[in-house]
Image (cartoon, rainbow, N blue to C red; front, side, top):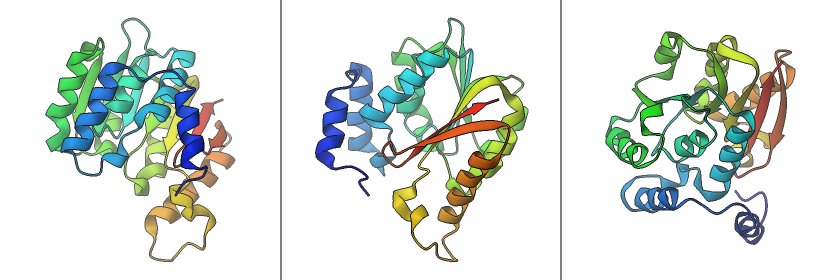
Length: 213
C-alpha cells in the first residue's frame, strides 16, 4: 500500500542524501538472489536510519531483524568511535551474505551477528543501548519492547518498522489476523507507556520513533 504516490516517494528519495555505493550493490544483489527483497530498507528509509543514528551518535545499537544487512550498515554510519552493533536474525541462510557486506564496509569489526530467536538472545546481552531498531516478526513486537526497555539508556531511541502494516491498522481487524492485532496493540503501548514518548511517521510502511524518558 502506498501512503503517498510513487512519484512523490521518488521525489523524496531523489532530494535526500545519495545512497552509498556499497549499499546500492547490496540492494541489487538482494533483489537478484534473496526471496522477498521488498523487506530491504532501501535508499530512502536507509538514509533516514543513517540520519537518526548520526543524531543519536550511539555507543551501542541493537537491531532485531537483520535480513541482508542494509539497515545495519545504515545505522552503523552513526556509531561512536569504538561503538558496537548487536544484530539478531533467525535466517541461517543469510548469515554469510550479511557478513560479506559487513566486512566490505568500514564497520565490519563493530558488527556482531547473532543467529537465533531474539526472545532468547536479548536477555543474554550484557550492555545498555542508545539506539534500537525493531524490524522482525510482528507478533513479538510487544515482547521485544518489554525485553529491551530496561536495557535502554535514558534518552535512547527505539525505532519500530512496519507499524502501519499496509494500512490494515485502520481497517476492521479480523479475528484471525494476529499480526495486525499485535501491531495495533504495540502502537497503543508506545502511545500510552509513560517510559517513552513516541511519534509515528508514515515513512514507507510506517515507522515509530520512541524516546526513552
